[in-house]
Length: 291
Image 1 (cartoon, rainbow, N blue to C red):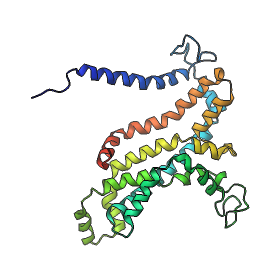
Image 2 (cartoon, helix red, strand yellow; image 1 turned 30 degrees about the vertical axis):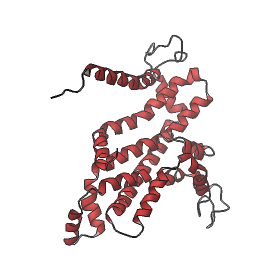
Image 3 (cartoon, rainbow, N blue to C red; image 1 turned 90 degrees about the vertical axis):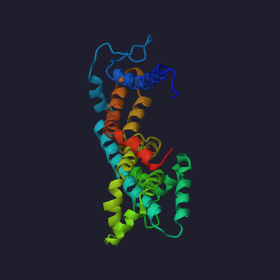
Image 4 (spheres, helix red, strand yellow; image 1 turned 180 degrees about the vertical axis):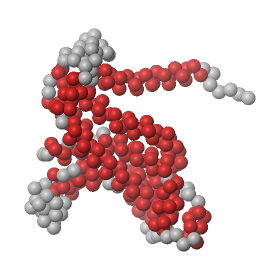
């Protein structure tokens, strides 16, 4: 039998070097969060601080208003993630297992939306939020108000409640479920809602967790749209925007350790969620049929 991999040590070396290269920025961020004023960015560069001080974390909570930013991030991220999971599971089931006229056209339209650059939709989406009927003082036609939905957290949630990628991912998995199982449920008297909720949905757990993880991380780190909406109302800022604005307007030598402390706090929820659900990630991608 022919053996593959003449130099396995080389593969291990590449993996180790790649791992170190990916861990170093995170390690530098953590170490910098404990540095004092004037220690960050000095030449020669020192990875470890002279003394580990938690004062930067206390300053982050006061200067960055972390409780408010954290609350906004949690509300927006959880709302978007739950909404994407529900809408993707429902639409994915309809496109995979229900027979109706125009199903193929609708699926192609959903695929087409995935090809549009996100920046292309910024202005149209903003105008929709601005002229939302009966919101922010607008009349039934969306006129005469003081900002529509752009003055509330709904502006950060509604544009992302449906995901074309999520629908595609769920559809790809559900289409592989045997039709005989669903037909047997129909013979036993189950309606479409019961089939989806009691039979199909439990089997989508790995894919749903994968989709939820991708959506959670993407929404938590979303920056451009949140910066646009919160430009007129700072109370709508989330963690990425608040931390970046502090870095932009204050003295870098004095505030970078504080910014790093804020980044550490911002990264922890994403890191915890990923570590808890990482075992489902690869499995979910494989089961969905993605390459």
